[in-house]
Length: 494
Image (cartoon, rainbow, N blue to C red; front, top):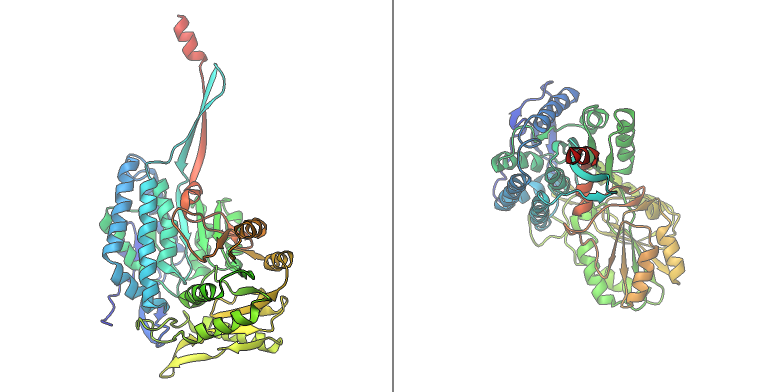
């Protein structure tokens, strides 16, 4: 691996790189070797205020929110997609450096960023209202207008991809943006700023304030001049975002939060096909994935065969340097996350679950936040590892007998983000999918996110949707205009 090109590490406000008002900086570390990568300007409330002023001016007085045709707005968004594609390898190398995901996964993330931005660029000039026939005396029309200045706060597990998920629909709708990346993984968002400027976005349309959630995130959620906030992260933080929105100007929120997603393998499924598929998706991104399928419900008639085959496949996965393309898992994002996952593994053991495979940390020359892929058996539904989101490479295998039983157990969670069903019986698949309380249900595939398909959760997994036309709607305000015909009739009678 050649030396990774680092981005400008200042704040990006009004198309300019600026130091934070306080002059403070925070550090970002390489989770593979625990070494310091660089220091990044640390914003706070004063910097958020500056960014919001720039975004408000761009929305109210600049061409983006006033005179620019939607077709031109779409052209600029599409230009951004082209630039992301052009800079794919640099972005991927930087993402792997900062968050530890495999270089193959990082490249896939950037490819998906391109697809998402292109999809929403195509939507920019297709946002339309309706004409509503009322009577011979009135005509009503609806206008779908950009909601205004929006705040985008993204998590550390897919830093640039999650930002693009939110940025695409916000820009297509005509909004201006103040964004915050995670303090654990700030670098690819900073790199994206240069591409946004090069694409031709007017000053103030996109602003990035790096910093801590307790300061920048809190300031954004409580800000009186932000019209909407979209957040991806933990359910605990999501509650704080909602509280801030409620206590300020009642800004609407989109929340994509945690999950404890079930994967259901019925008796008729092709075991080898399912195991091969599971090997590829279950530990991708080092299992730091909100819709990570951490609960495997396997029909009792195939449980032993499934477990044996799955175990052998997982033993083949290599943990190590994420830049080595032969490795499948890299490190977890931080020491904090590393220790948290190991704590859950010990909790599982202490509550009586059997650690069937893995369950230990892994290091390279004594360094790195690696955890071996872990499988637990002899697990009951009330155990901590079966109820709480671990956000690491830990899977529990749970046998079941009947369809009704597995539906009830799969839904027995505070979350409702995603679920998987594996069967050759399409009627069974449809019946079960109708009864699962999850925002995304994948049948004979898993974690297959597409730009055209909405993504979001039920219950405490969130509010609203990312991706698809549904995402655009959340960045729009609907205005109804009702026109009386009486004045026209009076003029015609004269």
